[in-house]
Image: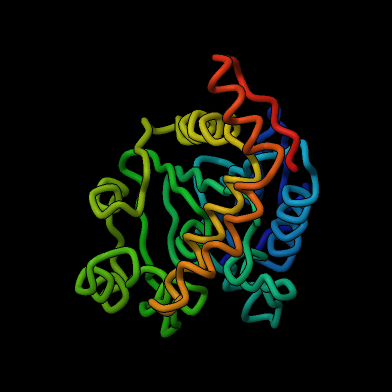
Amino acid sequence: MSDETQTETAPAVLTERRGGVLIITINRPEVRNAVNGAVAEGVAGALEELDADDALAVGILTGAGGYFCAGMDLGAFVKGERPWFGDRGFAGITQRAARKPLIAAIEGFAVAGGMEIAISCDLIVAAKGAKMGIPESKRSLVAAGGALLRLPRRMPYHVVMELALTGDPLPAERFHEFGVVNRLAEPGGAVDAALELAAAIEQNGPLAVAASKQIIEQQQDWALDEMWAKQGEVAGPVLMSEDAKEGASAFKEKRAPVWRGR
């Protein structure tokens, strides 16, 4: 969280293309990348770009200046500014992220709403020593941007309760032990490590990647007697696609596949 405001002299969110990867950078380092309305709009727009462009396969979300995000800009909040955007929710991501895979690359810290942005992504890479947590209770606020809903499904109950009730952060290494952080990087190397992870995803069939993500996201809500049918609805078209045939042919012919996305 940040109680500072910033005179905007540059876009609040920057995007950069690296082949099939879109790097999305929250660009308010003067206020530790605190989220205001411009950030929410910028992130939402970048996610729209990611999903709409067939040349893009993976997104990486990070922050400028050696920080990921300090959460909601409290100064802007007190003035009545809403850091939400449409049906995407807080920071333009927490209620609806991207259809394509999204990797959070954390340097410095991801706290409060910054933590909620990170866990809205599909994968997390964090620099060693980075602090992560939900300190909202210290300001008589509630981590209502997804942390109290998502973290209990991903971490031990009592650890999440301690994070929420004390507001004290934990280092990225602890979140790595719990499986919330996928990979640790040396300080300053989170984006590079995320790019390596993105490269491993990018080489795979886009239809299969999208379907796999959709099934993993939705399966927790499927009843036991319906889960196979619902999985079939998502996976079936992929298994019958041109790309599936291409993948099998490429394996047999010992060559790299050429994906068509159909």
